[in-house]
Length: 400
Image (cartoon, rainbow, N blue to C red; front, side, top):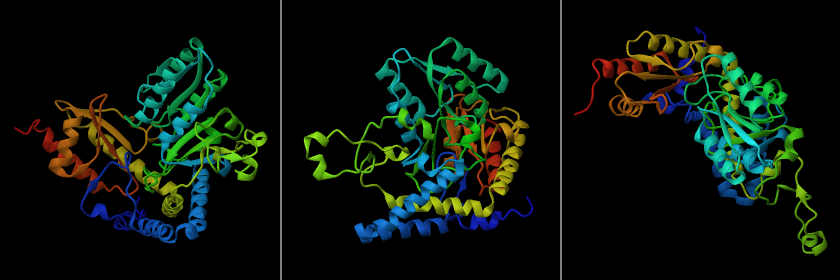
């Protein structure tokens, strides 16, 4: 893109002056301008204590609205939390799974999905079925129909984008097929929100999780769960506290035995929020969203599509390299995963960092490396990575 303000963008990220940062899919960098506001928010509340709480709460609520707008939800359908892992746990712990019900996920899920799902399986004696992610959407959907037809599945937890391969799944079709079989759907949007347009109404999911620390490049420890309004009462929070119940806590009434059990959980997603929180941590969510919106979501998507597609083409042309991410942008994103002949992914990842100061992430299955192309990624970043890879590959070099 000739008019994309890449240098102006990069000038606002201090780390990019001395690092080749290609791991936004794990943790995004916060710009200096957003960081300045973030530190102001933190200092104001910590210095003022309770006096500063109204302003901190206001920023907290603006974050709720920002997350809601990003996915075309209503603010009362959004519960704020620490990360996507919280949201997955809320759903799996909050659902009343019937006896004999099973769970469905994919074979490329993050531990944030697999570990809570395993815990729920242990506690409810539920089976877990795996949908194999393949590079053929129709074959994958046929596999899904077969799994749903032959098993009593109650909930499907599926990532919008695979954190391992970067493949974008046909999530609206997956959710539609699940609805046809009476199966609830929880979409992990950790790798999709802020990469490309995400619309929960079009997707048709019952729940969605996401975070502020990856592609939004916002504050770490911020996340959300979307709970479709008519699905709220399906989830019973495992915790209760002031703020999560209705009516609000009233000590004078609570001390009367006849009233003790008359409270219930809130009717909206905020039933999962209670007690004293890091109100001031969330103000920068709005700032991060506004900064990216100011660049332009379409412009960012076009830049990332161009950079990542060029990278995939360059990798595919290199002997000994196996690309694991679909070539087309419509079926992928800024994540590019590959394997290199003669290299274990963990070792290759370590050498790219230790020898060349290139930050990326290893992939376990298939053993390889994951590159994240973000709105601040330059062609020079990609060329430094490719040059380092070529050096390591010709011939396969090992430290003695």
